Length: 311
Image 1 (spheres, helix red, strand yellow):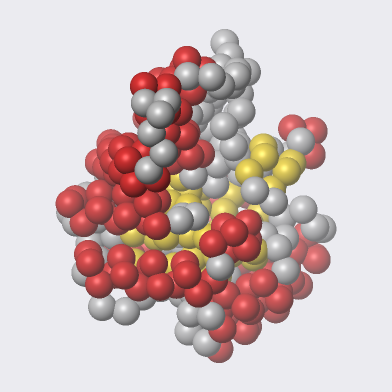
Image 2 (cartoon, rainbow, N blue to C red):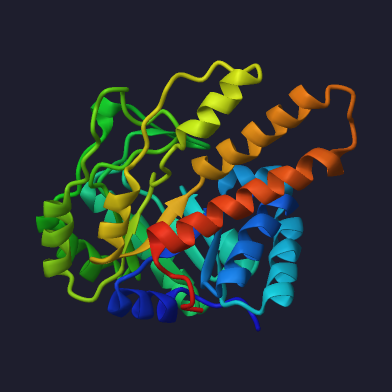
């Protein structure tokens, strides 16, 4: 089975009241952990690559890893560029075999966002590739994304129809209270997604797939484990998983997950070296790290996304 676009999987997700997991990948073990979980649960899958991951791992290596995952699993898998910030980057990924790209011009003016998004859409559609755009700005830090709370803004529902019609984008990432990275909300706060915005957007764009970025839940168990074994991470509160499940039952068809995977992997490696300080074989510490990622992804697929059995 070749790589697929997200078009058909989003249609099924919207109609079925579930979301597809978009998991960021950086190396072989992360790809393996994600795809093994999806195979066990027969779940459709989006593997996404940031600009930073592409620079780190090399485009060709990442493509071959994803091709191997398709061969091993037989699953419908889309390969997506996460937070592309220029036309040139999006074009390079399209030319290099990606089936989906995101152009993130959310920091620009409304008109400039439309212009750049439209440019990417025209090129992508000519090559059979779908495009995700963003309207509204999430706070947080992750790879090249660095937005202060003061510069963040909720999506304005009254803008979405014009934006989608003028750009021709295939899905839209909106800002309803999620946040990039592990340090999302202050301890003692109770994060609450703006479902009123999501509902208003879905009424203005009936049947149109909506995307949530910054949707990791930051499991406290991994933060505590990292600190126990030599780290110094402050307490962090992620997006409540019951709210993500509610969003998936509405118009949200794609939920991005990255920080949870990093925390699971890092905490497991730290624990390994604490318990085995004389070990040095990468296979010995990456094997349990891969297993931790697999367990995390399986939990997300079943308990948050609801896409198990939907491949």
